[in-house]
Length: 110
Ligand SMILES: [Zn+2]
Image (cartoon, rainbow, N blue to C red):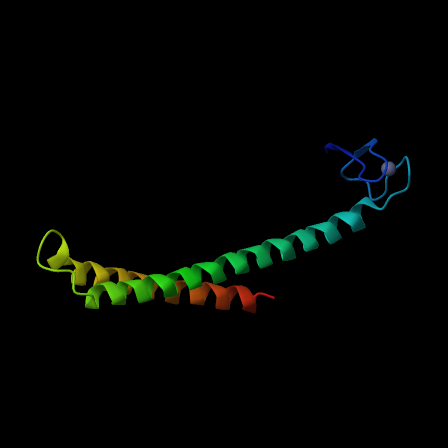
């Protein structure tokens, strides 16, 4: 058993109590509702994070494809750029698929 402060009056109450003994505030009902709201908020935040990751993966994929076709020349890392670009494109394609899968799973949980 722990002592928490009532969200309504701020006085110390037991976390096992259904209502606040000082002001009669419904602690149990308030808790489950705020927990559900918190869960929904966290999920939508996670979803928007994944959507922006997906966008980033697409951009990286396009950049990788672009880099592998661009004429970089034969000096320095020029000859390696098609491989680097191809690697980046492959990586971001896999990343895109993983992110897409995670978005799908997250949406199905609703
Ligand atoms: Zn209270």
